[in-house]
Length: 279
Figure 1 (cartoon, one colour):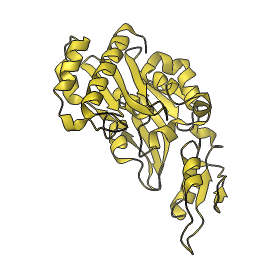
Figure 2 (tube, helix red, strand yellow; figure 1 turned 30 degrees about the vertical axis):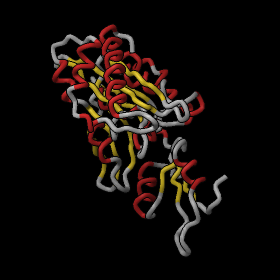
Figure 3 (spheres, one colour; figure 1 turned 90 degrees about the vertical axis):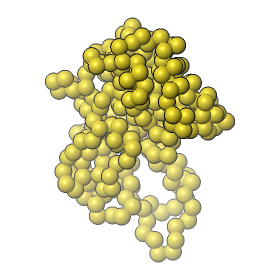
Figure 4 (spheres, helix red, strand yellow; figure 1 turned 45 degrees about the vertical axis):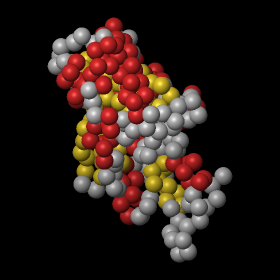
């Protein structure tokens, strides 16, 4: 139960949704609702005279759903559910790290309701898709008052969505089976205690981690140390030990040293799976 007054709008098109976001301070988008609704339930009373919050329900916008291939790029609509992403044959074939990250997210109920855009936009805790999107070299497509634009997933993870904009799609380079994702979940929440995603490219591996770090990060130093191989567990762990210790953030009863080691182990497993073509 949400114990507060909330205004509600269900726009018929994207332009109207953007107009509502622009015109109403504090307006919030409702898509899957997996993060937003618990937040609203926990909200305390508002100050006297404060306007009721507005929920802009975009679940009916068909233009934000679906997965298509456009040349060498997969276009994943922001309202595509995690379950749809996990099961889609195009994604499984051309971006297996994303499919694996979606499968690892929560439980079936969460995956059936949670959306790609919502998972990318979550702040304050690690989620699974951003790290896979960074490893894949994906772009986050945005729509706002100035029109449409796109930003690298790595940059988006650092800054979050600009004010009065919404995610419309994730644009993912199609690279075949050379990608993988590994995760150790927090037992209480199922959020990543640590997760690693990799994609093997002609220039070497792209490697990203989350959970063990302050946010989802691409580890260019590790990539450089592993360029040209070998990618054995021993070599990968040595590459991670060479990273600055303050890169890994202790928390949830774990030390930075432990999380740095865990990130290396998960990365080694992911590289092994990517090399074998099994996400």
